[in-house]
Length: 313
Image 1 (tube, one colour):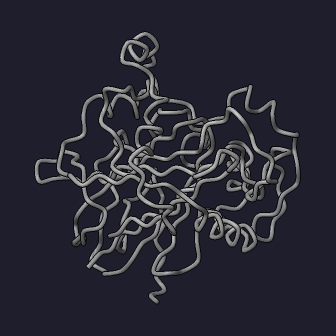
Image 2 (cartoon, one colour):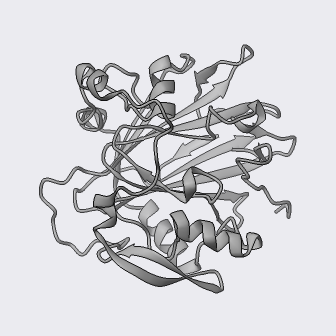
């Protein structure tokens, strides 16, 4: 394995990948024609979108006060060899306690991969194809309920690093509202080179692990706690998750998940999708569907983990 390190410094340096080619949700609970409909049913109607879509600033990723009230307060957690203080929900857990939660939406995650074409436009791309040096891609995510997003990266099977939340992005926040899409990297970055993941000249395999949770994960500081943690010692960021937490995330990756995958690609990203991700106005039923939709098979699941592997030849 190569010893080079890939840093995702969104605000300061270009995003260069050794190789991000196949979508993997392991294992799949099976293709389900109803999963896409179940995911999209909670999208608002177009009229509802227009009546509430007056936000013109970038959406906040910090927890709203109602979500903060659910937290049990401040708790000391260990990240690496350092103990820090972070708000942790009292009922946060990766393994459910077996108690059914009626009237709770099944956790769902929609994912669309966009590639930059020769005209500079964002077009839907098939993640299973091979990518070449110089190609650029971006990921658009959408959830069907409010929750928290964590993104971890591994290079050629190496150790994971957390690239989101980041002290350099969204004020360290990672709270997502249902059907308000999140894109990584951001198309509104100050420079073109910062708006895309760019494949470098080295062949390899990159894996992005998307962890979507109902409550904040333990052992991971966010918002001001994350900013202060990184400010105290920049060398310990991006954060490397504790082995115990990473094992539990890998376990959740094998949980039953229903999947619906698109078969056609090449369409240009719509202005509605751009507005939704940059202004926080949300997607409606008339907007394009995600290329890949994943939903947990049960309503009592608190975590959904999906992996995107992109191969660079």
